[in-house]
Length: 68
Length: 262
Image 1 (cartoon, rainbow over the protein chains, first blue to last red):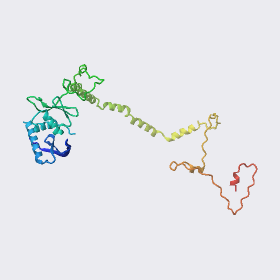
Image 2: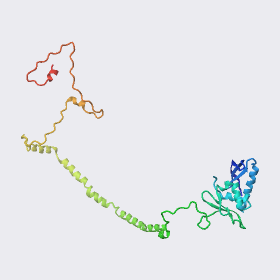
Image 3: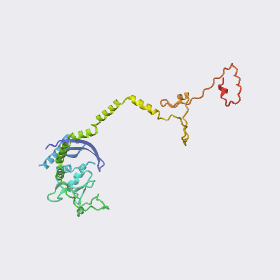
Image 4: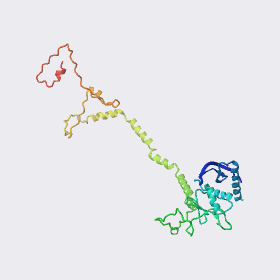
């Protein structure tokens, strides 16, 4: 099953925490073929393509498992 | 607010939350709020999602049971016990629903093929009618009646005209003049006074036109012209003495002679 990553959109969000600090995150919205949109949050400081690709692979395997 | 997508929510729960339960659902709601589209977890175990538009989805099958697993199934609203209240329930209105059983069923629709067959049957004799009309026209297409009518009405014109021309050719103009001379003596040429009574209404006097009036006529192409003023007599030169007044003749009326007299 072909599930290419399409329509990727990225945005930055800042969420205030109870301890008074701020949590900066990067929200990535994307489609896997006709499925989606998926919206995944990543720590802004640790975000890289590897983390994004790992989550995409997990979601892709789940979708493929649903159609077996 | 992001739109709700049930498939994406189910795939996310199956992928990142392998341990199924209300606690995992609450955690997913907290960590990934975008998948829930602003909805809130409701239900006795917090296993249902109510969206802001009122839709409710059941997210856990067999909650706290042996076969508990993720699911995203729209939960139908109902009036049974434990069913959530419809936040957009309609109020009873003044109109009652129509009882369809009281409406008589519509009659059978006319069969198109039957309609066409009926029309064709009505037109079936058209060929016979056309043949009859053609034979009637053929029967009356002989020129004999027309020639008879022509000979009776127009055909005798040549003979009648020939007889008239022959009569004119045989008549001598001299004989006509002699006949007129004889009629001159029969005319009463004596003058007699006019004895007819006068007409009741006075006749309209015709307009008297002078030779110069022709130039004042209205010309439709040039528009109406202003009436011409009477001619002004020429003034005498200042050196010459004024002419002596003419002696007034007794019995002469009017002063026209004072200006135009020589």
